[in-house]
Image (cartoon, rainbow, N blue to C red; front, side, top):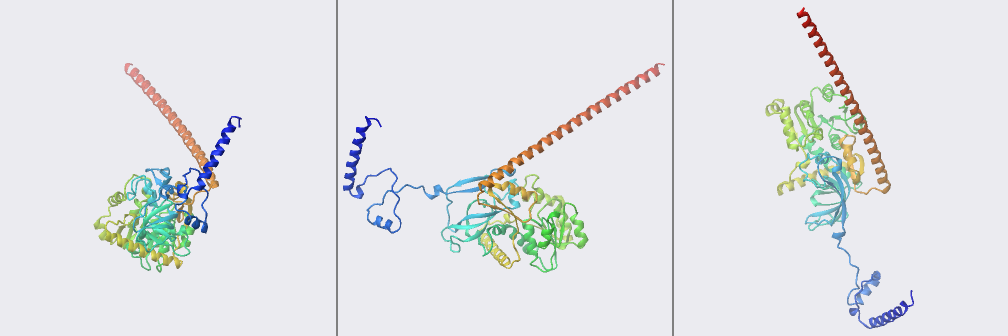
Length: 489
């Protein structure tokens, strides 16, 4: 501090002292406002006393409304195409609750084939991008709207909805939530709704499964396949055929599949004909294409084929399921006459297409789902059904999760957890990605090199062919000359 600053400092100190003395004589209401940070407010009884002793509350630090500071992560389908089209984003603002709705803090989400189809634009029940996919999740109720009497904050629930479940917070009608039974994990709860309701409706509503019948379950190691196997085992003496790669046979055999068949190395039609020459009572078909035709021809009289997916179409043209069904119908000529003559039936099922277009249908659907879910809970408590979890991925790893399902490497349900990845996991994931990029680059470079070699060989062959043709032309020319000489002579 310089000598010239000292008098001013002293004067400021005296002025501050006088102001302090004046403030002490004023009432609290006359206290001037200040921009300085206030002292921390007293707690407990002291807070109540302080409030009682003053006419106006002490100035408090301004806080932004919770609606403005509230944020949550969500997976968003940004467009149709590859795995990179599903991106992790942060949404801001607390969702508003309408009457009859609840807000759920999501713990786990289920991955289904419909989500893979939606990513490729093959599932028209999902709104256009940008949109959050996901049909099922499990979590804890964090808030309830007006007129909600059968749910409360803190309830553990599983949720079934057409879309929007792949995020940390969801708002749904209370009728779309079902209480998780004691002892069931969040992972198991997220694996239950889509797979088991689908399997249940197909087997018992469409299929009318009864004792001593035979059933073919395609993709028997998948989520629906395992659910269908477990539900079939609740009926006496059901013979189960299941298609899966050989590495999965032990698991599906232990689960209840009577005859596992490796569809990659065996003709499953021939294998089934050997064991059951008369055919099958029920075929569950998630594949489509030629497998639908094969399944139909495997049916006994009065048999039923239930088509509920288009796994064979995932890499094909973008068509909605109705267009795909029409293609199957036209391609395989399953016309009315052949259906009548064969005494067989073909059913189509997809949980996402059960519309709630009227209040009556909506109420009926809610009642059906509620009834079926309660049945599942009873079966779960009895140990007759138990979702098999194949693997759990973080939201950040959704691309890897989808790839695992699309390449049919899973045995059971693939789950997404909303728990953020730890830094160590992120580093490990980044390392794996880097290694994968290097491997992909090596593969691409090798492909390019192989292509160059192939192109070079093709060019060599072309050159050799040209030389051969040139030789032939020269030979022909010489022969013509020889003939001309002979004619002259």
